[in-house]
Amino acid sequence: MKKTALLFDLDGTLTDSQEGIVKCVVESLKPIGITADPASLLGFIGPPLTWSYPHYFGLNEEETEQAVARFQARYATVGKFENRVYAGIPETLAALCARGYRLAVATSKPDRFAKEIIAHFDLARYFEVVQGADMEEHSCKADVIRLVLADMGVSPADAVMVGDRHHDMEGAGQTGVEAVGVLWGYGDREELLTSGAAEILSTPEELLTLFP
Image 1 (tube, rainbow, N blue to C red):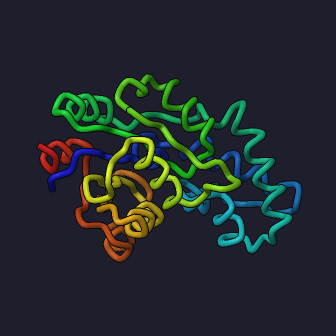
Image 2 (image 1 turned 90 degrees about the vertical axis):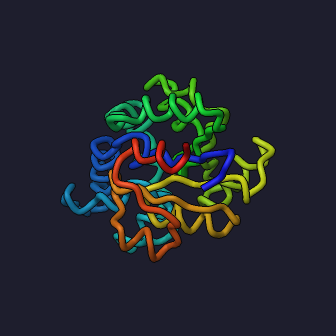
């Protein structure tokens, strides 16, 4: 797979953000009388919150807006650092950079949180661009990918999107970017293949075989 730019999702791909996201969802639902089992909320990891609340709980637009606001209030102070970098990610990123690949983060997480998390875990050194959603104009994965490509001056044919959920694969497809699915996050093989993954990887180190 000959590419020059590798775009990475954040949640479920670079970091395991389960604890922070799940706790924030649980707290955000309490004011409207919904008691959520934390084990049932893994689907919130990765996709935009504005999609997840209606999809999983049937919230209307106003309820979703309020739930997102409550989520982000807790996430901004506590939840964003209830998180950990997956084993092997820093070493893999360093090796890819040494091989001359240009790396970027393309995530549906709000932009300011994405930048704070990447800096907090000392990963900024590896990425030319860290781009999240702005929740207003550019909120879907395809929009974020387009912003990254424009910022880097890279054509879709020269880029690949690496992610763990169908939103990553579909966003790549909508922008003409090839997609690579990873199994150490929160999507499974069937989800990734049916949504357009060209390759499926089981460990971060396998990226070094795919991109020599």
